[in-house]
Image (cartoon, rainbow, N blue to C red; front, side):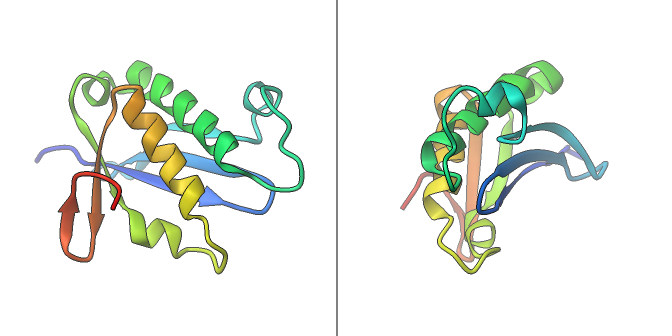
Amino acid sequence: MARRFVLRVYVAAKHMTANVVDWNERRVVASASTVEKSISDAFELGKNCNSKAAASVGEVLAMRLKTEEPEIGLGGGVHMDVEKEIEKKSVDTGPEVWAVVDALRKRGVKVLVHNEHGVVGSKL
C-alpha cells in the first residue's frame, strides 16, 4: 500500500501548529509551531497569529520534511482537505492556512489540495 501523507494545520488566537501525518502509520513525521522559540523569536507575534507567522511555520515544516521524509521532499506529495482545515474554527483562518501551503510549495513540497469535488491543483 502506498504511503499517504496528510497536512494538518491548527490555528489558535496566538499560535499555530502545522503537522504532516503519515496516514498509514498514524504518526506525525514532521511538525512546526509558533510556540517554538526559534520560530517565535524570528518576528513579533503580537496579539494573534498572522500570515507572516504561518509562512514561517510552513518554511520550517518544509525543511523538516526534507530531512525526516526525503520521499516527500523529492517529489512525493502531501494531501490536504483545505476546506476542512479552514472550517475547524469559527473564525476565518483561510489566510493562515494558505500561507502554510504556499510556503511549502515555495520550498519544493508538492501539496495536493482536496475539496468536496476532488483534487484541485492550486488555490482557487
